[in-house]
Image (cartoon, rainbow, N blue to C red):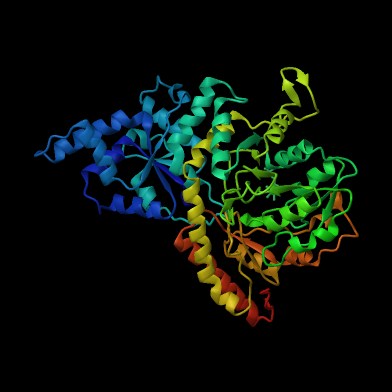
Length: 528
Ligand SMILES: *Cc1c(COP(=O)(O)O)cnc(C)c1O
């Protein structure tokens, strides 16, 4: 491990005692505060809590003779005198070397190793420092240099916020043992249905499987056509084709990147069975218009809400806007699990029942298979993770609004100079900001320059689906989708993007675009 790469620092009992006895403002305090600002996480090991509190108590009782400190005073002292820290869980493997002269040292090493390769243990005990890494003295911490790193999506800060709930929820599943269809699934479905504002939620194995099962429940198959957007993730049209049906592509509205509702009706034929709009980047498609078309032609409407859970459309939640809606719990989505997951939402009781059967091999009772289905269940561990995340989800959606507003302010100057176009959210919508996606000409050069400056970006999506080999349709003609595929660029976006980091991202964009102008590489006006 190099000092530069340090991401996590565990403080052992001796260091905590020193920090508690000394007044804030001393060198070690200042150094640790600096580490925190640079994004290094500080930890105290729960397995060492007794030793830590006793040492704090003893140290203060000997240095400040006027006071007599109790254990609970010592506990308070940690919160008052230490920089922001988290508790690092003790697990059973930490006891494996309990015959060591200093068993806690071994336990500390074990627990620190779980944090990953870039974690160290700060200690003031010579016997521990003699063991070498991961034990580190204060000197090496003072000397450490750090490269701030910007994440496209940062899931660590969220995890830090909910760690105690998350750990206990996961452990509860570990011990109760109902790893498939445990009680957490039922709880989660109830809460998700309530959040979306529909009667039924059926949790499934992924967003892709949610879409597949929705189509299966509607009995869509060979010979059928499903109208959708070509400017989306591959899965949207993949599931249509998998069932032997044909995806029929309708071009997008260049302002919202969602399917252009005004163009849907001309694409309807006697084979059309469903319309599958995608609520891209977190903004709902024009569901009212689309539902009206669906009704006029007696075809189903399925919202691909993989990116828009938490968004609203005319005061209603995404996933409550159509006959059936599907979302994804892929880790990077607004509501992400720690693995794959998804859900279907509907008000239709029969459809919900059908979905429940399909996700379990079409069983309507044990070992009686009324239809063909799939193994499409969400696992209980993921449900436990999602339940822990749900408690803070509304707050995270609000934080995303703040981040999006800040981008809009910081980048307004570039839009005014027609160097790029900022995302447009219709006044009847609130976005869940799964992505903050700008459009710009010369996108690839801009992305390269940003990468060089340490700003991560992504392209959602570089190729319209009718140009993908597996789904190729030479006759498809969607010029707005082609243009979007060349111009879109997603910037770092997550609820915990700090004001400073965001300012750095925006300033880098301003600088790069200014530099490119001076070398004749113009990002000409793209405002639509
Ligand atoms: C992520 C995504 C999917 C697929 O979800 P998974 O959970 O990854 O299977 C489908 N459609 C869209 C628009 C997506 O963004």
